[in-house]
Length: 202
Image (cartoon, rainbow, N blue to C red; front, side, top):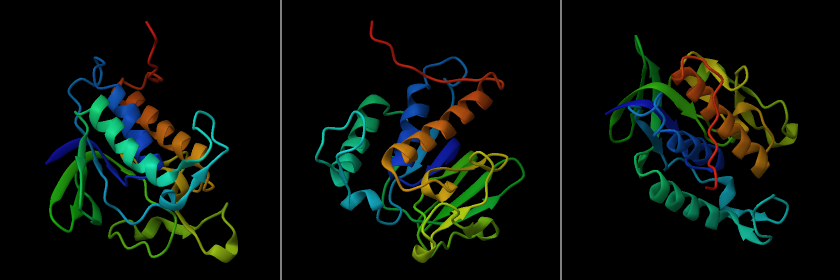
């Protein structure tokens, strides 16, 4: 299966990236683009979270509920975004014009790949080992990692977002990181014209 963008990781940064990309698929510059997200990837730190300090979330919201509701939101609003379940990524390999993403079940090819996993060890995806480094914003005692990047970009067509991009483990930060990567990809699709997507109440 071939994608224009394939997101690896179904936590907050990955789903936020998918939502923004999905919301743009009716635009002229994105109408023929194919987007996918591999949802099953480790256990999310969001699973055990309780949120009282996030703008727009009702105090007492549970992370496990956000994970479930986020999947439903993506499916209902943007069904064109392919949700891939029950597959674990084992390799992200460079090809001539794109990337090959190998899971425990299938192989995918994508022009852009977004790594949206958490920052815990071990990190054992073949093809990405050379980018792993110590997390610069996490408590040293926790021994967290990040992937070397510049403004979310590891190399052409390969992005990272959320805590694995070097950001702190905070819901709003992770969501913003995923949205930022999405708008960077949209900008490339839109012939490098700076691009964002807003829904408007009519």
